[in-house]
Image (cartoon, rainbow, N blue to C red; front, side):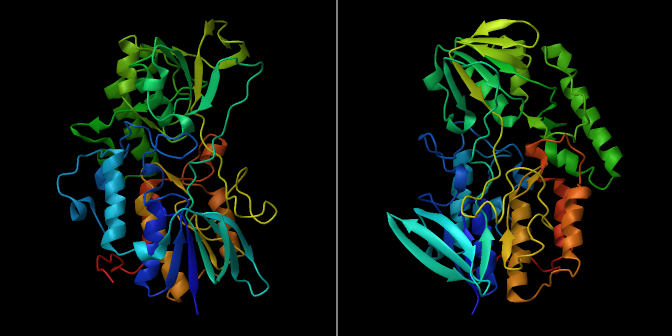
Amino acid sequence: MKKVCVIGAGPSGITALKNLLDQGLEAVCYDFNTQVGGNWVYNEKTGHSSVFETTHIISSKTLSQYEDFTFDDFEKGMPDYPSHDQLRRYFQGYASHFNLYPHIEFNTLVKSCELDEAKNWVVKTEHNGVEKTETFTHLVVCNGHHWLPRMPQYPGEFSGKFMHSHDFKKAEPFRDQRILVIGGGNSACDVAVETSRVSTKTSISWRRGYRIVPKFLFGKPSDVVASRLAWLPTRLKFFLSELSVKIFSGSNKNYGLPEPEHSITATHPTINEELLYKVRHGKVFPKPDIDHFEGKNVHFTDGSVEEFDTIIACTGYILEHPFFRKDFLNYSEGDVPLYLKMLHEKYENLFFVGMFQPLGCIWPGSELQSKIAARAIKGLWKRPNNIAELCQREVTHPHLNQIKTPRHTITVDFHLFIKQLKKHLPKNYVSKSVI
């Protein structure tokens, strides 16, 4: 009899669980937190992976919803960019609507997952200090990839507070401080904007130029506008996207920020026009890359030196699966050769859901991956015979040619990826029914 273990009850985990149950499969989901929603459950405790106090989604609701349970299915009148609390309620509404809670065990840490001689998964968990071991035929991994901070390294020592944005929850603790934010991604710009409201001074250090994309173009969410170009040839599509950004935001030089030296797809775009507003209003001060530390003094590559009380590094996360032995599976460095970003060439009863980074939202892709995984386990979908070749092709033929950094090992183009996944599903794949 088939029995499936799902790790994580975040946005990817709950859709994995829902689609497994849709196929009549026995499944249990383990989650370390106390409720559904993953890092969209705001928690002021540091060390817990959660959004900031003021976080809103950076992709619009139109392109960030499950097809089985849209935002309108949940609650009419949601804004274009819902807040973290609205998203928490949406995910928990999804779990309630599809009666997932009886299949989820909260406050449960997955300590290890190993294959036995019969190629079944032996899963060891801990709940309230009590360990338990169970055996499953299949494993679906949905533990997310935004929880283990990647800290930058610089010469010298900084004697102030040096922290990662993982532990940033709200701006108030940084009132009247001199703040330096490292990074040009979405988290970095959010932290710079929020701390600038209360700090004595906030500066932001970029080692390269980033494109700042507005949330709205021509009165519509920018990702909705971009989606209307999805049918165009790739190069033309991204040329028009880049041109639109330049028209609306102008040159980075107008804001004292370095110009990007790469195409718009070479890094993840930053969706935060408020940063540009704050820079031009003298609330956030651009700085180049850091050269070295000396006490509370930070020496920059342009020769300037400034004193700071706190440095907040917004430098991404390490892709980590602590329940696997490192000699068994380790994607923390290097390439990630998984077909459809979910299937391993060797282990047929192992699936990854949500372990990709689209230029857009993860959840619609996670829903489609979940449907494929559930159909595969049920016996309704067959793995390709040349899966080893296809796994390697994921590495050698990425959707986008991005700068070679750990952040870009799992990037996909949202529209291409969605189209690719749907090819493996029947036309009637949407399932709104409650079992």
